[in-house]
Length: 149
Image 1 (spheres, helix red, strand yellow):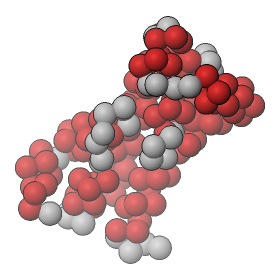
Image 2 (image 1 turned 60 degrees about the vertical axis):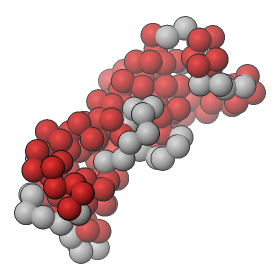
Image 3 (image 1 turned 120 degrees about the horizontal axis):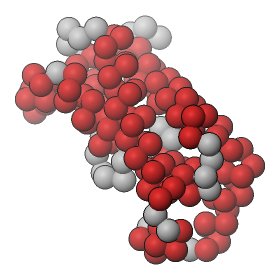
Image 4 (image 1 turned 90 degrees about the vertical axis):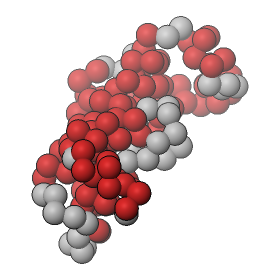
C-alpha cells in the first residue's frame, strides 16, 4: 500500500477524484485507494459518501456525454455497431431509469450511463438510482475489507 501513500495522505479529496475518474470513460480504478483508506483509520461514513458522490458525478458526466453529443458522433467515437446500439436502446427503453442502478458495473457501466443520456431518460431518477447502485457497491467493498460480512 506504500504506492498509494501520497493518495491516502491527500485524504478524501483524493478519494473523490479517484472515484470520479473511475466512473468516466477513462481507465481508472478507485477500489485500490478506497481499500488502502478503509484498512487505515478513516471512518466508514466519510469514505462511503465521498466515494459514492464522486463516482456518481463521474457517471453523470457520462450521462451528459450521451445527452449532449450527437448520436452519430457518439456511435462513431465509441465504435458501436448499429445492432449493439439497437440492443442498448431496447434495454434502456424497457427498464428506463432503473438501468442506472447497474452503472457501477465494470466495462458496461459507462455505456449504460451514456445510453441513459442518449435516450433522454429523466435526470433525477437516473441520479438517485445511480447513486444507490454505486453506494451499495462501495458499502459492500468497505464491509468486506472491515470484516463486517
